[in-house]
Image 1: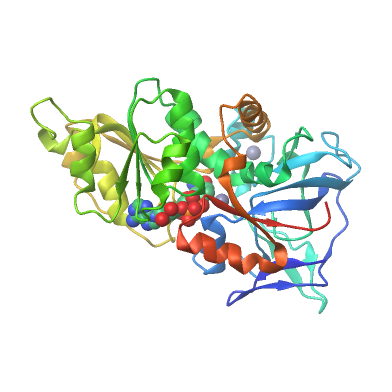
Image 2 (image 1 turned 120 degrees about the vertical axis):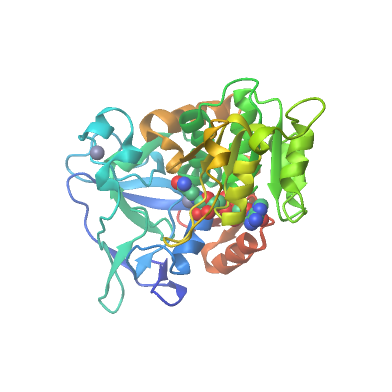
Length: 371
Ligand SMILES: NC(=O)c1ccc[n+]([C@@H]2O[C@H](COP(=O)([O-])OP(=O)(O)OC[C@H]3O[C@@H](n4cnc5c(N)ncnc54)[C@H](O)[C@@H]3O)[C@@H](O)[C@H]2O)c1
Ligand SMILES: [Zn+2]
Ligand SMILES: [Zn+2]
């Protein structure tokens, strides 16, 4: 079978891959579609400290083709979204419904793929969705109704849960609270639409690609600022002033209640902090390299009680939150189909990569012939 492998130097589509037989709690999924997330490009450029060679892709959906002897939650023929959280299901955080804090979800690897030359290949993000078939744990498979298009469902696996969960689970944004969102990509658009669902009256989108304005507004942004403009913070202050007579107050407070950083660049994180009103919070969602640093002024935090928090995978619990997201989509509250800007067959995967690098698409999706 075919799959896209990053070998530590380059990424290429190969044929002749084989997959190990499933263990008792394993599920083999035939991938129908997989989204290309910025985190895939980070892996392919070597900035993530995870092993290679590996089969790429971590945002996928497909059809179950084989299950291990102890699997009870899915059966062959079921449509599933794959969660990247290979959580243990038994530790404290798992028991409390916080599998993003399960220690077993980081730093473990397996090599279930073998090339035609006999080389064993790692998984990426415990998912490896850029292959015709992959093998995942039963806990990673969330069954979805068959009327949800698999090209749209694939995006739930990362971009949707990350963005929606950042707003509804991690931040728990309340009706009436205002927000700015830096980075209007697959993740940022989901932050924006979740803010709309949460009842934010002012949702300010910021992106360095001006063409993103239309998409941002389609998903619920009330304002758009070009991230290349000189004074992004001042523009946010003009929209949400500190006081009717002054945009900024003590310690430069004034602005929004929430700032979602879906970029992870030091300048963006600094601007995000500067855009906050008293008691506002920056939620860092973007993932930078392991050594990237940001700087800020202590005084911006204490006197006006600003906060800074990180967020992994939308702080979701997949078996609770993915069905909720599917229901919100079916009720017309969340847009999924509109997130798919373009689909490419796997042999054209480099076109999807170029689309993502240009910053012009909501999401590009790679499709596989089998299903
Ligand atoms: N925390 C998590 O669990 C998690 C999960 C998925 C993705 N991510 C990370 O989230 C980030 C976004 O991912 P994505 O797939 O949406 O990426 P994307 O490429 O689809 O979108 C990023 C957007 O940011 C814009 N941008 C770039 N520099 C900017 C700047 N200085 N100011 C404003 N906008 C800027 C780009 O034009 C683009 O529209 C990445 O860092 C990714 O690795 C984190
Ligand atoms: Zn656990
Ligand atoms: Zn991702």
